Amino acid sequence: MRTLLIIPTLILAAAGASADTLSKQLRACAAIEASDKRLACYDTLSGTLDQRAEQNFGQEQLRITEDAPDTIEAAIADISKTAYNKALITLDNGQVWRQNDSTRLTWKVGDAVVLERGLLGSFFMKQADGGRKIRVKRIR
Image 1 (cartoon, rainbow, N blue to C red):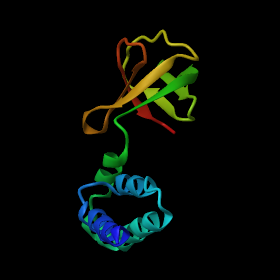
Image 2 (cartoon, helix red, strand yellow; image 1 turned 120 degrees about the horizontal axis):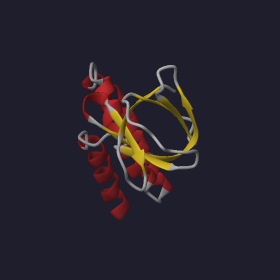
Image 3 (cartoon, rainbow, N blue to C red; image 1 turned 180 degrees about the vertical axis):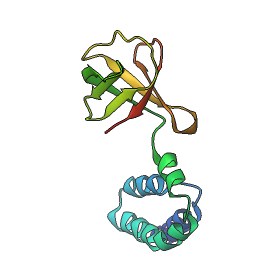
């Protein structure tokens, strides 16, 4: 009997939680231990995909930004210079970032860095143990 009460609750929670992003709702479904309840949760979410697509029409970029983390940490795998003496920083996760300001860097391969989101689509990089931020743009 409890199972019959829990499934409608999960369905209503998944369908009514439109304020949550799809990735948060998928994580919530994945956290359910009972396989039949987990499948019911996934089925409910899949039934709302067309409705979500219509609601998000024209705001796709906003949705992507909402799902992205505010900061990430990585280690520097390589540093080189561009033609205008800007740093080109390759991280251990494969991302490549180019320095956009003229701050002098003393960073070296192996240093841990933190990338954080700024305003209006800008990004900043700083050493994980502190220090000045530099403005960067992702190349790859």
